[in-house]
Length: 105
Image (cartoon, rainbow, N blue to C red):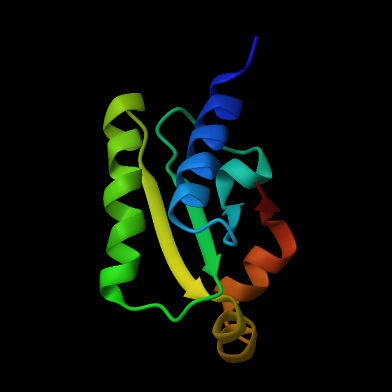
């Protein structure tokens, strides 16, 4: 029997891959560290090969919102181009945190 976390992660991964099959999804924050509580959100970094803009990010957010409503979970979603993420964000605390604790799903 699958745990609730496994079901949620599977649903996230499958939906993101429907939108962009080459994307990477990384879970970070309290759930990645195993320190979540029942009200914890799901911190998600989605890395894509294409250029991103607000409209493209909204596609992910709107589709993931359907899962949020269905499962009663909250997602915090960031979408970046893979190259841009590595080149422009490597020095930020967020990048360092995700590099240290992030789990690719």
